[in-house]
Length: 190
Image 1: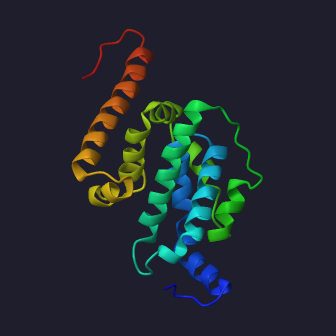
Image 2: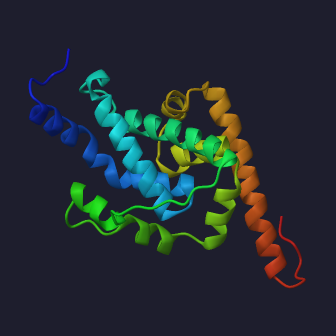
C-alpha cells in the first residue's frame, strides 16, 4: 500500500527520494551513453519509469541504487534496440535545466564531466562492451560497492569483479597504447 493518499503527496515523496540523485545519475548516464543527448534521454526515461513504479519502492531503502538499476536496465534495452536500428536522439530539455531541478545553483554536469575527462578515456570507455561499461560506471564512477553493483546489475558479485577486471584491463590497454604511440619511438614503460 502506497505511503500517499493523493497524487500531490506521491509527487512530493518522489521528488524527495529521487531528485536528489539527478546529477549523479546524469553523470553515470553520460558515462554509459557517451553523448549528452543520449544521457538526457536515458535519464528522462529512468525518471519516467521510476515515477510510474514508485508505488513498488520501499521508502527508507536505497533510492539511488533503485534508480540506477532502472537506468541500467533501460540502457541495456536501448543498446539492444540500437543494434537493430539507428535513431537520432533529441531532447528539448538542456542538461542545465535538468540539473537545476535538483539544485538551482548546480553547474551543468555535462560541462564538468567533459572538462574533467581526457577524450581518450571517454573513447576507451565508449568502446567497452555494454556489460563491462555498466560495471565500471556502477563501481568506479558511481561509487557503489561490489555487492550493491551486483544487485543493480542483476548478477553475482563474482561476475561484477570479473567484468571490472576485464574492463579495467581493456581500458588500461587502450590508454597505454595511445600513450606509447604518442611518445614517438621512446621506450615503452611497463
